[in-house]
Image (cartoon, rainbow, N blue to C red; front, side, top):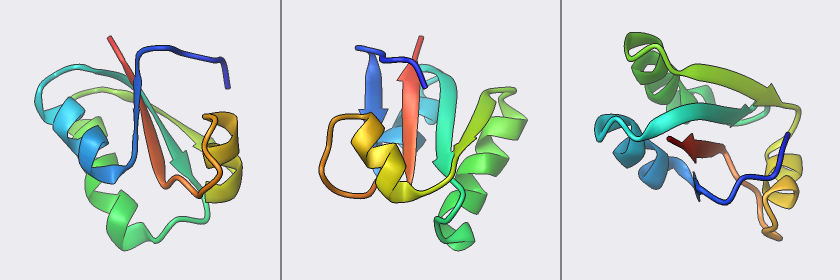
Length: 77
């Protein structure tokens, strides 16, 4: 995962970015609850936004400079 300045971390902010057509790429933690990630994945599919997976939410958080788990991270346009 490359370092990006223009990003949002977390479910609510990612959904907001997708709805506002600001999302370019979404990272999803493979171990995240599918009831949380399912709607995000569906939105990405509908809007043709690329999705990449990271093994764990802990790893996704650490890769993005936070010390807590992250379910999703969105790279902005």
